[in-house]
Length: 247
Image (cartoon, rainbow, N blue to C red; front, side):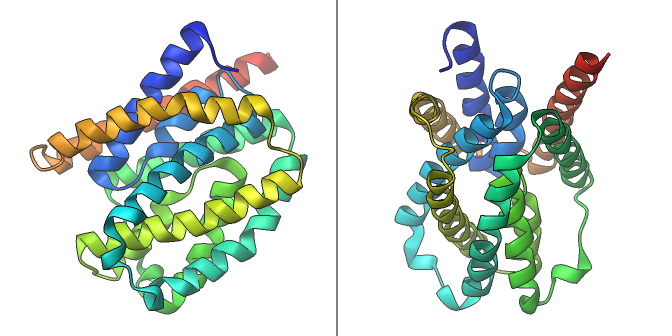
């Protein structure tokens, strides 16, 4: 279980991640995952990140459910649920070093996408929801990263901001609940993992509180650059650590 300086650093990362997600709508795993993977085994780190995010998206759904339209998100949810068993299988059997490198590379790539606000034309059609839902769920179930992909899809539909937020939260909630059912089935849920999820909740709450204060005042373009810088730095740090261990 996280303790001492590791816990302090992890709580700060949880706080920063929640501030980022509460301000721009995604990025919690991008910030928290590379930090946790410095202290925890990849399987445990992935599940801890996903556990804390589950609490976050559940709170969003409860607060904003009036904006939810099932008809626009059901296809993504079906795709997401279909991907969960495959993702859990990958997570349970992947080599720890390979998993860390994969997570680092995905974080780095998504950091570049965030930095340059890259658009993906192929996700503009609503029919792409099932494919995007599948790929996102496969990614978050296996490596806890992938939110920007479905966020790009939601924004491409030109929905109002509140609808985007509620739709993404509902999709993630469905995918994460399915993932935890399969994590338990695969024997990946342990006492220390659940305790680590619990002790990071205060950082989540504090970060969301700060986000609610600054979301309307901050320059979104500058903030996006800052988030991308943090994300890319975290990815480089994780990849460097893994490569140095190989030397």
